Image (cartoon, rainbow, N blue to C red; front, side):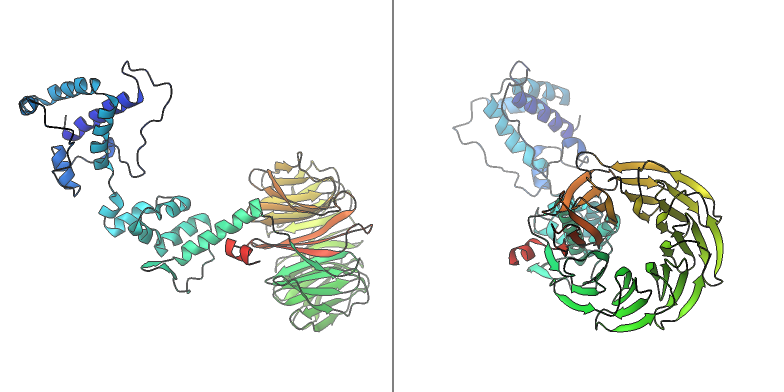
Length: 556
């Protein structure tokens, strides 16, 4: 047995002596000796050149002459005993050490541990070339890497490596980093990695979403006691539309109403937004294109002969659906109507447009797939037995929700019905489809998560914390599901597990008339349009910002 094997056996015997009584039974109480964070067990050490304990100390950079116990003169015969020990073979020495340890008192064993154990606590990272040390650190999870940076100054420098954190961000799906920004120094000689800052920021935002804090949301009051019918959010601008015939542009930072967009002679029922361009549809049968920065009405789009009920913007084109049973394709920059799609025999209630195909659903129970360039109806998807209220379209699948309580998944190319999703008990008023995962909100107060490829219901978001009334709006965000309801709450759910996490918003008048009509979310903000139908809650917008660090919170 080699030198390290001998020390391993000594460790085993000493720890057994410390952890158990002389008779080998565990002590009934008391703490065991703890290893340091940098502990390396003898079994993990590579066989090296040291053959004695003194050699090992020299290899570790310590003096071979360690400080001795000074309790008195050495016992007589010590040298003779040592000469006899050295003359024995390896197995004989081990047997002698076994007997010696068994005869030692606890404080004597502790002394041996204090002498021997530090020699196995080696800063292996500092001993490696920088490239190898960084390679070792790549195996740590980001949270462990943050802890490793607190070990010592050299580990801190290694753990701030920008390329290392770029790889960690890639693994975690973090892509937002101001790489052109200079690395700032928090202390002399240590620069903070921009990619590390990006990871910490994303981790903080995720924690704020899931756990929240005690800060009250910013309240934006407007539209008097009217209903907010549509809500858009882009950058730092929020645009709300109402049945009071106006739209209002708000600052998401200050909460101030920047301007009111007036011009419609009827209630605003739908809107779309891209950067600072806003398109609105009204009961006055027109669409209007606005510049949200200046408040100017750029174009008024005439053509529909009844209420403009829905629209969808893609690039420079918007497709509108009306109660006049038609859809119109408009060029937003010129205000010109390019195409009219006719075929529905009742009001068009919902529309989707991906730049290539238009999909529409109507009160005639039909879903239609169109080629807008030729104005041809490619498929009429029949199967629903009541009005179609909601649509999703990702280029491959068309998903339709109806008052008949079912949701149907269709093949966009063939027009065939792939799945009929059953389980809801009432009107499916809103849906979100992303990466083959569908989330549906229903007037039966539940939210369901589906796999559109298999047609299986993965989760039903209900239980003790479920909504108490109809679900009004849905949003996907950061692996989370946000749902608003007529019960006056906005609930947060975990998409993977289906678990309720918390109520992000709970109106004071919840359960007695307070309603959250619409929600819009980005990675860092949530905007809610709330009010009531009986005067118990004034009409307002609530803005919650989750990109606040501790310093910002304290400054507020």
